Length: 268
Length: 253
Ligand SMILES: Nc1ncnc2c1ncn2[C@@H]1O[C@H](COP(=O)(O)OP(=O)(O)O)[C@@H](O)[C@H]1O
Ligand SMILES: [Mg+2]
Image (cartoon, rainbow over all chains, first blue to last red; front, side):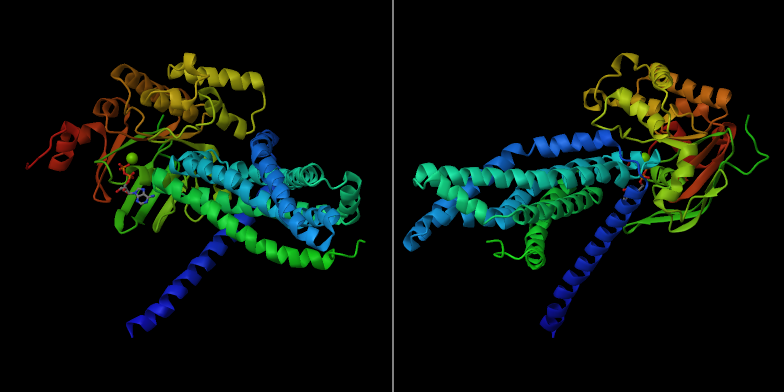
């Protein structure tokens, strides 16, 4: 008897947690929409965030993109050689990087770096009453803390993804041409023929959506932080874990949707 | 100076608040008249800060009514509280300075957010506020590089710079040396005398209390144990009140 109630209670509680979480995110989105319609942009804060997100993520994004492109080329080459189509490596690498690997890996890495920073910064302000100090001065915390980060991420993320893809393609070129001796014109012409602008657009759309996910999840964790430094640490960890999982799940559905709009393979 | 003909600037009726399992406030009734300085005393952890946070809408009561300058504060949503917060400013117990901004920018913050754009005027008002609290030389420092007392003073500068009609001070003189404490007391008195500012002050500092208070409220066990003037406080026969103001404790150790 006892175990039966446990079996119902544990998933039941998890479900309630999920509903309450989604409710809180919905309230944050509502406050953010009100903040948008107030037309107070605080451009200096947006610029500050773009510098810290965009400039600060350069190493992360370049290394991630480049080594993903390199290792993917390295592995595909061996298999493609069996079929005698090694010069087509560029095509598969390009499509995979644009549509999946570029945005997903850049999203996860930026989520780790920027998401953690957002949750920690806002969380620290929350537990030291700086958020309350904002409120007392008539400044809504979402207007001041979340909106500038949100705008900065929506601008930065598509660019960071595009950058990550570019470095991936460059690394792939270097590995294929200089590592395996595939003639550069062959590699390039295959790559260009089998990639169209929509593959890049798909990558950037995904980056845009991932930017929204990271900001919402991380700022939410920051704004609800309590119990001092310990609470800030917990919130920061949660921000990274939750945003990573949500990005991976969202990516699957985004892929289905975007493939429906711009199908793969009709561009030859 | 104290205007008892109009509705009190702050009116609290039947304020109840529970936090977790703890019943912090169990029915507080309190009026603060326009131009009055009312001090709240009482042991630590009795809900003085919690009471203050209700006045400015940082906390919502479980039951009771709070009115500030005729506006009912309880039940208002965050964005609807803006008019109240234009009229009232607050010094936090821990000062709550913005870590990322210098002292000067912290003090300028409420002016900028209130829509003041005249750079010269902002600069002058920030300079005046810092001068009053004796921080003129430290305007370009970050809060992490200040001592506890300096941080408190920067917080006071930020609370008084907007010239709000009412200022809430949460332990303004704790962690200050006696001389600076006296300066802060004088500032609170001057603001009252010259600008008719209403003040609600939480304090443990008896010297400061007897200098600035028009009336005193003592909070104990979630209720007002005492409410009256300085003379009435001194004359009170309540042993709890007498022990508190004389700093006596009955310890069984
Ligand atoms: N946000 C909160 N959550 C839970 N308990 C709180 C919170 N804020 C204050 N308390 C509790 O309420 C009581 C009164 O706190 P406070 O008003 O800060 O006391 P003080 O009279 O010293 O200013 C304390 O026991 C404190 O632990
Ligand atoms: Mg307190």
